[in-house]
Image (cartoon, rainbow, N blue to C red; front, top):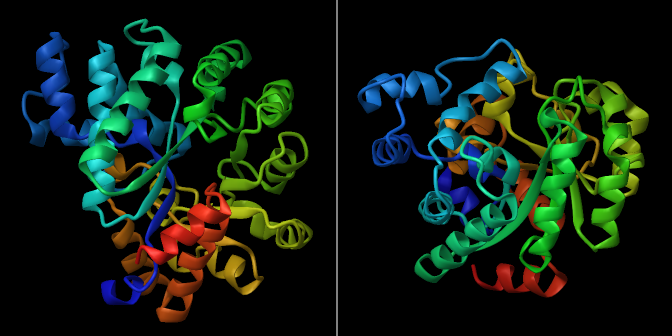
Amino acid sequence: MSHVIQSLPLLDLHRHLDGNIRATTIMSLAEKNGIKLPANNIEELLPHVQIQESEPDLLAFLAKLDWGVKVLATLDDVKRVAYENVEDAFKAGLHYAELRFSPFYMAMTHNLPVADVVAAVIDGITLGQKDYPVKIKLLGILSRTFGVEHCNTELEAILTHRHHITGLDLAGDETNYPCELFVDLFKKARDHDMRITVHAGEAQGPDSVWQAIKLLGAERIGHGVNSYQDQDLLDYMVKYNIGLESCLTSNYQTGTVADLSQHPIKTFLANGNLVCLNTDDPAVENTEIKQEFELAHSMLGFGKDEFTKLQQNAIEMSFLSSSEKKALLNSI
């Protein structure tokens, strides 16, 4: 199927930088920093840092990300994983990726200064783009799981480096930390002209998606799986060009979708919604963007027409300027 997707740029708009820390890097940083891992070699480590089949729920899935950030003892470590993310994006065949990260999550184990973590990520990304011809934009995440106060710290750190961060996201425990808690923070981000995408409709229903749009100003919804339960919501999203970032492997592994052949991405496409394919956490899920297209082909029966539409949607949904979108299309 790869020849089918090569006529248009390949994008990944929902890709967590801190969910894509290589197992080999976790081993190497643990050794360098004297951190004890629950394993002595890569084979033993993989079950701790990579989903093997499917997890019972979103929070069990998220726990697999923890070892990747626990080994980040210095700002150079942060810079290294950011750099490696650019290399991984290039090797995956991507032309453009939006990499999102939670600075507090990356900083917390070793009490790194949160704003300095943002700077280290920017440094690693800048260096990576010098070595690998792939275009990258950064999105900051507020990790709702840690509460409003820590999210405020994250936002301040992100705004310190505002000119290098394109957008803001809300991720983590959707059930216990609803959108309404974060209204002021997202208003502040929008006042600084930040683009907005929000994880919603993954662990909760359509109401959570409505809140992300109405309360936080979401232009895109991360996952949004359960949006299919509300036709008015789907039609509203069509009317206002609000995109859906679909992640097939992730939705299966978190238990959000029990049967991939029934994934609502089919409904979204048929309804005319702006929807695209993404990886979410490549290292944790052991997937890459082309595998997601293969999965869409084998499990959903998607072919050239659907692939073209998904790729066109990704360009339209991206947080690139009009001139950047043209340049990206001309580069292929």
